[in-house]
Amino acid sequence: MPEDATLLGVEELYKSQIVGIYGTDKRKLAKKLEELASTRDLFYLSLFPQTTLPVELEENRVKVATTFRDIIETIYNIYSGRMKVKVFVVSGIRDIERILGNDVVDYINAVASVARFC
Image (cartoon, rainbow, N blue to C red):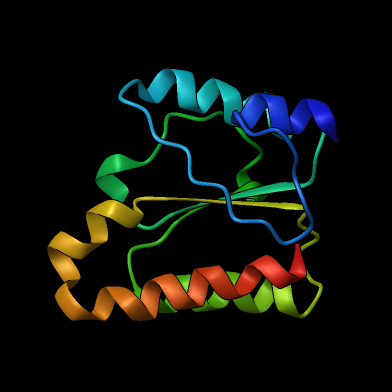
């Protein structure tokens, strides 16, 4: 929808598009996320607990991953259709490099693979 693109700061959104959004104010980012969630089937996955956005969403629409298994379970639920998702939001990608080193590629590939299902 055009209003979703505007909310995310892009001109148009396409199916399976990956959009990077950055900001220093976590509350403003959380508010954008909540606005988008109000009109879309959105799921929010935080890869780095310390940088999780202070977003207020339904409990079944948020996952703070503490292990790679948490990420894989989330992805499996999307792939299998157990979880209907139109917008898949991931935070903490920049931060995981600090703790994972070279393994960061596995995390990014795993979450990016979901794009074709949304």
